[in-house]
Length: 593
Ligand SMILES: NC(=O)C1=CN([C@@H]2O[C@H](COP(=O)(O)OP(=O)(O)OC[C@H]3O[C@@H](n4cnc5c(N)ncnc54)[C@H](OP(=O)(O)O)[C@@H]3O)[C@@H](O)[C@H]2O)C=CC1
Ligand SMILES: O=C1O[C@H](COP(=O)(O)O)[C@@H](O)[C@H](O)[C@H]1O
Image (cartoon, rainbow, N blue to C red; front, side, top):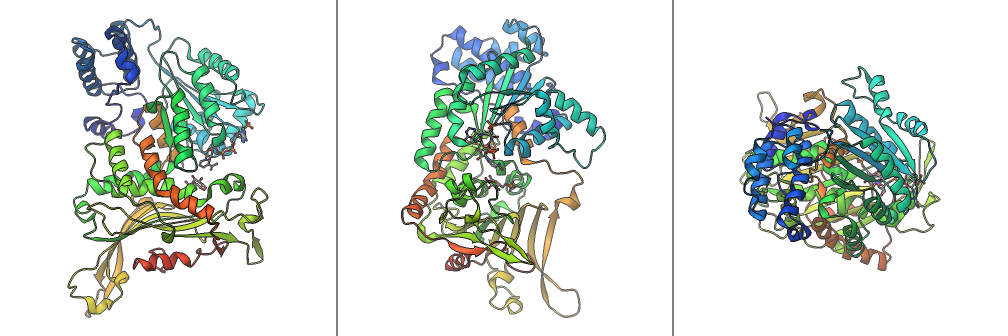
């Protein structure tokens, strides 16, 4: 069987089956510039790209599939057999005629904006966790890049404060941290300076030596400097002989127009397959599990339609405000911050048709289709709110506008509820309700699926007309305390006939002792492995913006006043009226949830 390099920290069966089903890296896509090349030039580009894929431990079956595809396109008749007989990267180099002495490739991960909040909070810890789990390739280097002046030692000191070890594997933690930190370096530079990126390039080369060098840039910087940074990284610090990929953080624009402009600008310097638009909710364990739940259990998929589902609820709440991020947030608001991306992505995965395979393009094709079947959100189907100051137990919690970085009188919503509809055969008429808010009473993200009532239910007497008590509800609690539970009706034990509601519960903490990896770990590993399934393709992004752009413009033009809700409350009552209009009761309200 083929060698694995980064993937051995993932279970074999997963990797194997995903490859068999058309998994990672299976497709070699031809850009128009590739197709214009001469046959020998094509062969060289192909061999180069395949060598890197090979180095990235793609199964040989995948390589064979690619070779077959390329064979057709390029007339490289003997290529497939030759490649199939390759058993080592050394042999690969010899066959392909590469003058590379070292057999192994390296991955250089540059965190652009290394001094910032996200880098400290998520990216460095995720990289360390991957290292700790032996998921990073043998040769890797982490570079921090930002304007702040820092030495390597200072960066290491900063990073070390953010690192923690998995609770189920604490042994050697200190040692592992030290080893990891030795691989971390820093380069100070401007984001718009090709010269500074060229200096970075020089330093990266020193670490890479004569190995094939793969480079991943993580843009952890404010969006207004994305393009300059991409331009400089791509022109001055792209890999000369391996792949170059760029992870782009949200927000991807503010509306259809600005998002399209961003995409256009990025594509001046990068091909679409080099751009990894991150939506970290797609990396969350339970969001990953959504497709498994749907497509690998016979009992769910037949119920997954308007015939059995009454409504679907996507709920996000945080029990803290925008403290510290008010400047950013005020320009975007909760609809752009959470709904248009995180919740909509979950909705797309929830509602899409069965993809042809688990290949990234097949899944993203289905997501685009379902997004394009949706009705753009209308103003009458939106409720917005903003938190106001609240005093509880002698503590005063601030209003959104108390934040010094938020303009006085700002109307930016910190809460929104919305009703969305998918106009296709499967979902016609089913309300998809979204609710997202900051400074609410709890921190939670969940999907609630409320099923229809049982026709001619013999036990109606027990429920009377309370549909919400009588019907089943499937809850996928994305966080915290991950769980999937199904509310069912059962008989209370005893001689009488009294019905009760109980949960069939898959509670992750009880079922699995292993700590669940952070979303950023999964996504970083995917980007290193070239797996695009969990990243947003540009047409997906366009479709997502089309749904929200008109209403966002209307809210701004009409200066709609948000409904004010106290910090720490359950949010505006308007959300209940909106749900009631579609005969829905939010599922997160009851005592037993
Ligand atoms: N923080 C979070 O929780 C999340 C963040 N994101 C996204 O990730 C990206 C990074 O976020 P975050 O780390 O919070 O951002 P920060 O505001 O912390 O900025 C990151 C770094 O960029 C540099 N920087 C900041 N402002 C400017 C500016 N105006 N001009 C040039 N450089 C600047 C600073 O580094 P220096 O001065 O040293 O150059 C800073 O350390 C953003 O796109 C954000 O939207 C997405 C989801 C969550
Ligand atoms: O993208 C964002 O997500 C966070 C919430 O992420 P979580 O993983 O902690 O649930 C949110 O706080 C932030 O406003 C938003 O930009």
